[in-house]
Structure formats: structure tokens, C-alpha cells
Length: 213
Image 1 (cartoon, helix red, strand yellow):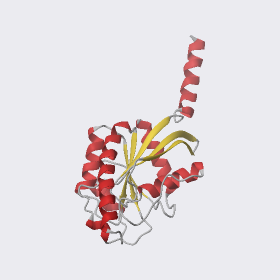
Image 2 (cartoon, helix red, strand yellow; image 1 turned 180 degrees about the horizontal axis):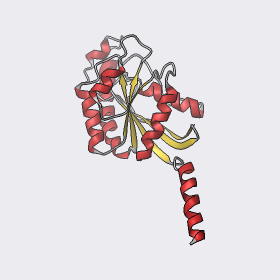
Image 3 (tube, one colour; image 1 turned 60 degrees about the vertical axis):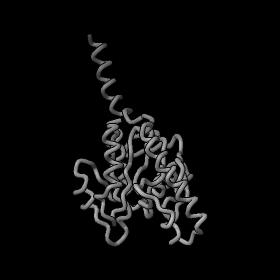
């Protein structure tokens, strides 16, 4: 009985220490140009020295699923290994004419619109493979819209743990309180993936998120 008691004691102690040593498939979802790839790049570069993908001011720059395997993240004595999965931006409507405003030719705009539409479909399909999801929203824009509600609704239906990131808090007009009010049942962290502001708070929230995986 004494030996069993000692074993239970050590299991409890070391179980708490090593419970974050897990592998998590972590998806980055959100509308176009919210900063998904910028955030995924910052995390990947911080812990592997390499970025995942390219970013630009043109919507739907990310039109294919891209990922980084085995990203080991350590924070506050916790550790976990992640597969970072950056997904194309979700949109309910993609019009090629939108891209003409960014200097693309009609041919290029139509090609990008077609690829972006395919990317949205792929993003939804990949939800079935996610174990946790970061929803990245632009904190300078109205969070309560059809796209955001659709994304989070799909996650709820699949019972996938969600952390909402209000990005671009370095910009004038950023308002995290609006995101909190729109989605009060979720944890919301305000960051700037571009400048790295509040990334410690983000990592703390990330490890709280994966407790539910």
C-alpha cells in the first residue's frame, strides 16, 4: 500500500510537470488580411528561425494551406510541440474586381479569385484535422459579421477549442472590447503580430487553450 501511495504521489507531481509535453495541430483561421500568416510567421521564426509564408497588403495572399511541423514552444516551464497550420482567409464572397484596385491585371485578378475560392474550401475541409484553433481578427474592424460568425460557428459545431486573437492593436482604431462583446464566451487576447506586442500574454493563453485538447 505504501509503494502504491508513493507511485500515486509521483504520478501526480510529474504528471503536472509534463502534462504539456504533447503534440498539437494548431490552425490559424480568420478573414483575409487579419494577420494570420504574420502571427504564424512570428511564432515559427521565434522557435525555429524560419517563417511559414509570405504576406502582402493584397487580400488572399495565402491561397493554399501551409504549415510548419514540430515547432517546440516553451513558456513559463511549460512545453508543447505544435504543427502550425496557416490557412487561406475565409470569405463569403470573392470578386475578382476587388483585386483590380491593387494593380493586378484582369487576368491576374481572375486567377487570384479562383485560387482564393479554392483556398476557402480547403480551409473548411482542414477543420476536421484541427485539434485547436486560433481565430485571428483585425481589432480595427467590426468583429461581428457573417464571416467571423460562420468561422466560429463551424468550430463550435466540431467542438474544437478556440482562442480569439484581436490583432493589430498597434494601429489607431483598435478596439479589443468590441471583440470581447461580440464573442463573450471565448478568451480574447489583443496583440500586434507585426510588432510582437503582448506575445507573452498570447503564449499564456495558448497553453491554457491546449489544456482542452
